[in-house]
Image (cartoon, rainbow, N blue to C red; front, side, top):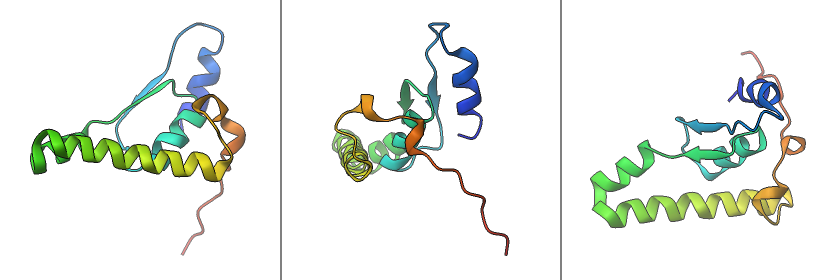
Length: 98
């Protein structure tokens, strides 16, 4: 996720789309990746967990949860549609050392 803004900037105007995969556990993760320049976000492992647990219904449940979380995050950020998501909505703060 930290490398994504630099990759997106380097490819800007080239027509190349950036897709991300891995590490997505929450709808807010999808939001952050889209804001940082991803055109699409692949969701593999959570789907496999849902499939292993409840088959097709489990995958549907996982996707519904992620969509609901993404919708909530967009609403809280003031985004009416995916196109409203952008880097201006991401603030990077250093993690406090213990």
